[in-house]
Image 1 (cartoon, one colour):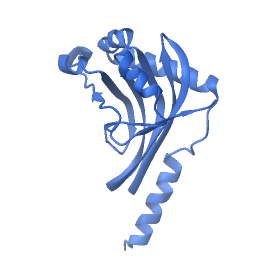
Image 2 (tube, rainbow, N blue to C red; image 1 turned 90 degrees about the horizontal axis):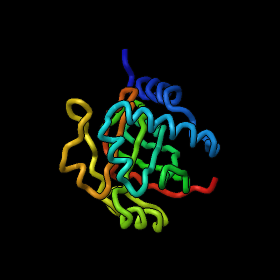
Image 3 (cartoon, rainbow, N blue to C red; image 1 turned 30 degrees about the vertical axis):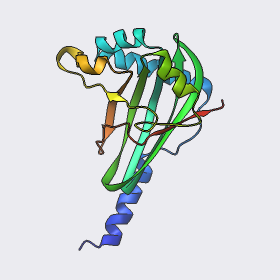
Length: 181
């Protein structure tokens, strides 16, 4: 006999085990994870490597953890690279309400393709995707190629290495804020 309270309790316990407690990572740990995430991205798509070479800046969140039962949230820490060097550290946070059950870990990369968009991002107190800038989500076609229209956008995002039960590929509503390390 299933009782709603038991089902809810079991779901909460599964989430507690599946989503690690968000802990502030060290600069060295973030830098190492960022480099690993970049290499994974390049394995997915040679076009991504070409776009990053042309970008003014690259924001990398190697591990974004998301979980939810009706109400969900996500959190991750990463770094902004300009000219291949880390210039600042950021976190990404979002919350959602609606049908959702599960947990996942994903990597996110946001490319600022021109100096104007990069400066708007860096000058903000907190940047929200779709409010402060529209991120064109890159989808990979055959051979890892990216749609030519997407490649022309001023801000391009990649979400990859999805694991877990929840599947929601979007940057919408993600609040990105600089953190002091």
